[in-house]
Length: 248
Image (tube, rainbow, N blue to C red; front, side, top):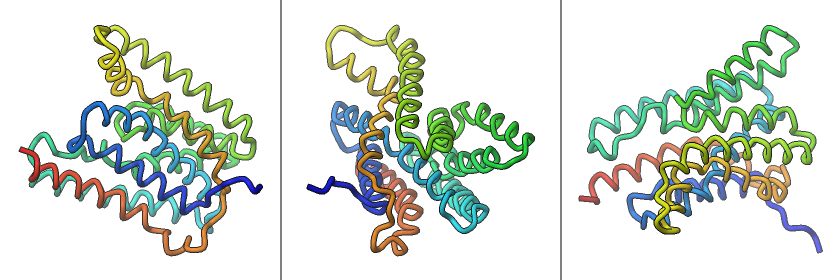
């Protein structure tokens, strides 16, 4: 029996559906939102993986980077404009709700690292360290993930082991800060504390997803080229508008 796999477009659709689940806590039970939050840690790293893959196959790395950056600027302007009409509790972060900028920075540092210049490699590693400061959305996890993916792309065993090491590192850091403030009176509070404060390590769920991903472009790949670029800001803006006007 042929092993079940999915192509690039199906992978993107799965990630986008999970993305929606992560952004609807306004409308669902907080405990269901906790579960969605854990499962959806794969979304950012999944798109980070696809960016690394895209840099390997694109005809113009420069245009690829500029496209990410342009959409990042577009979304930052859109977030700012949206905030003029939203209640304070539903306002969006200009930089924090904008994965395009993080992906663009990750693409830039990988491009610099892959060059033959020692100077560029030094700049790349410096950007990696600076980018780990949580100013951009998910940068503290997504940038190391993209860096590791670039180095281990052709060796799935080394890639998976590197991801496990990174997940273990985040588990130590986040659990050490979370355990002292968790309410241990019941399992629900423990679960909620871990889900909301120590969830980065659950990005490791991307490993089985990557083993099912065949790396091929689907039959309608060209038509899907800009789907993520449009869907990501659109779904966030719609969710925030609905929450702003529907929830009292």
